[in-house]
Length: 279
Ligand code: GLN
Image (cartoon, rainbow, N blue to C red; front, side, top):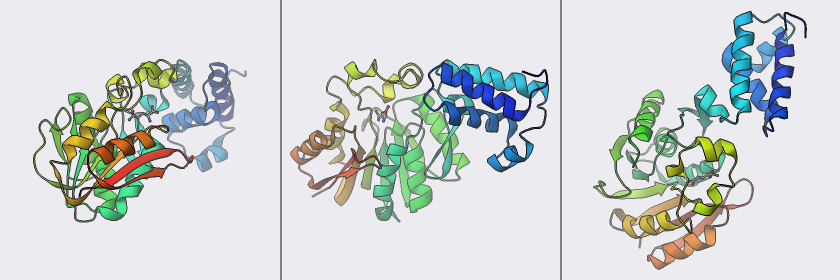
């Protein structure tokens, strides 16, 4: 390569390094990292792609590319992830907000206006914060059993200018009050499956947020039975599930005595949300 590369040169090189390293979204990620360090949007990049890149940016770009090539999640490098059109800070202490989880938020949004909402296992706070910000809930409490996660979630509430009451709690242990809606994206991956996940997830995301125990269903059993003591009559319980857990979680909720138990599919057509009504 010429000794003074252009933006286009380093982008091509960045893509190649990521592709060689077996990074699934190599093209996109090479671009996101360039956008991240230059603060250039797509349009500005196309205007400037043949310009020479300042040397410090070349070095910094390859540094980030090499970190990504070692399977550190993109969002741990950029420090943020968009969810429901809002920006969230992320770190290795919280699950990176997923598009799948937008299915859960979108399902609940029509019901949350002026309601009292409880989010169990809030992690980055993405569910509670987007429900508050986009749905206009009257009150939202959000809990997690990780103090580090709660401190990220608090930062995210400030970043998105919403008032959420955060509670340090092992599931319902420190929860008080009654709610119109209880929502959760609990850990649901079966323990034996964790080792087969992508290295980005397996090695860099918090195990505590992923591991759902031997059958992956332990947290749904707790939520199903405990939520009954906190849900108002005709209140809604809604949880995210693994793509193959819809039927089993519906059965758990039916056994707990909820009515109108139903499953919602995500954008890929997989079961993703199970919801029910408090009788
Ligand atoms: N959907 C996440 C994953 O695929 C898992 C989320 C969870 O366990 N709540 O890794």
